[in-house]
Amino acid sequence: MRLFVGLIVVIAACVPPTTVTPPPPVNRCTAPTGTGTQHDGDTITADTTWTAAGSPHVITYTPVVKAGATLTIEPCAVVQINGGYGLDVEGTLSAVGDLNRHITITGSDAANPWTDLHVVGGFADLEYVDVSNGGGNSSPMIDVWGKSTPTRTQNARLQHVTLTNSATFGLGVERAGTLTDDSTDVTITGSKKQPMTAVGPSLAGGLPDGTFTGNGANEILVLANDSMLEDTTWHDRGIPYRVGDTNGNGGTLKVGNNIPGALVTWTIDPGVTIRVMPAGVIAANHSTMGVMGSIVAAGTAAKPITFTAGTEAQTAGSWRGLVFEAAPADTTMLDHVVVQYAGGPSQADSFHCRPGSLAGYSNDENAAVAFFGQPFADVLTNSTISDSAADGVDLAYNGDQVNLLAGNTFINVARCKLTLPRDANGGCPNPVPACP
Image (cartoon, rainbow, N blue to C red; front, top):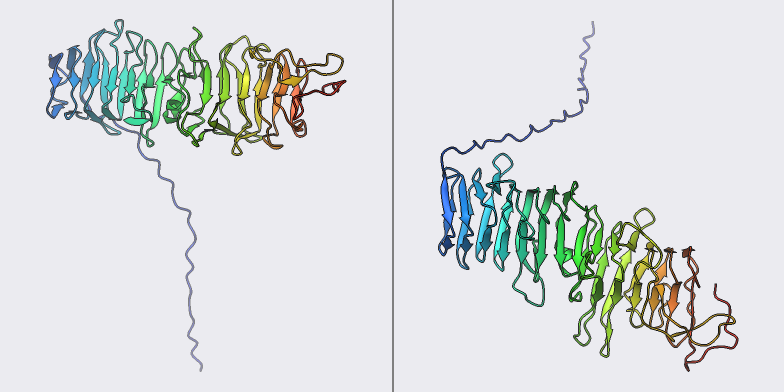
């Protein structure tokens, strides 16, 4: 008799892991009771804490956090600000809540907005803070000012911050002030004007991501009062940028500085739309010391970069266009871009040759894209020029003809798709060929 010894192998079935949905946040803050704590124009010169237990903290006249001092606002604290007043930060504001314990900064009377949380060269650290019913006196509800230095300074950190019902803008940056690179998840809704504004084109590069809907105009207002003086990237924030306001201010955006040998580069992310107000222009700057600005606009087929008119009534010639005031820097790139409704007055003439029977020098340099120095052949690729009131691409210099037609699309261009430059000696052929 034989004895068989068997080996039994048990194979466990593969069970996919169970997806666990985290519970929603729970507000562990309780509404304040009692009269709270009054702040009547406090001058805060030493480290100070506004507690949740002391809430509501009622501001009846604007307190000032002085340089060297830190004002800490505890999680669950409530700050109520009377109409016409705010909170100025020259030192440090630390208002750090958490997912379940938000900090609230609001108005005492929704019908009478408070002004702003004004960072004046100091630093504000806000996390899980709900801000509402401010923006009085034409101020953004959170107004971040730097120290007016030549380059940007990071004067605020905003994470998981909600701005609601500003009487003007939700968030503003100016005077070289901007936000930290890790600022994120900012929600702005109910602003009577734009959710965000930047006084200076470089500062627009430091605005955070988030959700920006339900405002008077869901766009980023950029007042280009000064040239872009440092390398800057405009990120896709889901809403367009608008260069210039409705009063004709800040519509000329120049990229470059006056430092010999220095080149400022403006990089634009794929998918960005830039709207330029009437008579505005975007220019890669140039001076007697050389080319000062480079534009790197590398879109994709799925996410082109669009330069267009800033008004709702979009008509040909609404704005001047893209202008390169000298031969473009070799880093310049216009790929998968769309330039619409440009070709407005340039206030320049006689830089290129008039086509066909017109002969002679040009009467104007109006075009959607103008080069006042000889470009390289692939500076403009896979792009569309549409609805220009004048020429499409203007070669406004003395030098060789560069073919920028191949691979690009021209739609509803009133005159030449591509103009003819003067020759190296400044002359024109006779007769001048008809323009394409």
